[in-house]
Image 1 (tube, one colour):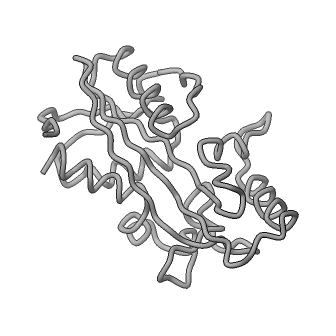
Image 2 (tube, helix red, strand yellow):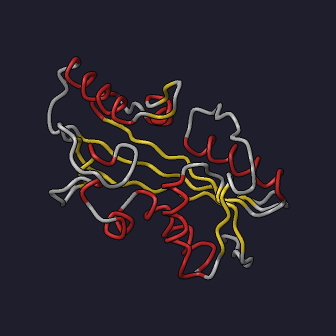
Length: 203
């Protein structure tokens, strides 16, 4: 039996403005105020785990301990079958540069490695999102979501963030970066994990 969330404020443990905006839209119908990690001046903990759930837990627990608020953390990434599941939990690392994250660089690397391996097309992949909701008393709930698709090259679209311009969900002829946010948010990996969170803790 999952624990019901009965507060009116939730700390979303992310410094990613795109992710925070997505969460605000998703929480809007439930009358819950979303507070971001940057607003609370939280530092980003080092993500030392090798799984999505492990890294999400690090972020959620650090945020709870720093603020005393219930905290929701997401760890997400893209798994490319032709690269044995890489970049996976290291998705953001592939985009890291001294001056911030460059996802065009990460997508180019992904394409180059697929070509080097002569990976068979279509290049199947999935976005994964694991949410950990942590309470100040140490209780945690975990929800995992995915969306299946294929990778396209060259990339297409100006919307979204991260690998969105390269990812075309199954059943669609457009990439996530070619979809308005409300359409993408209805079918994304985060929407999947979020639906499970809502059913478990808010339903």
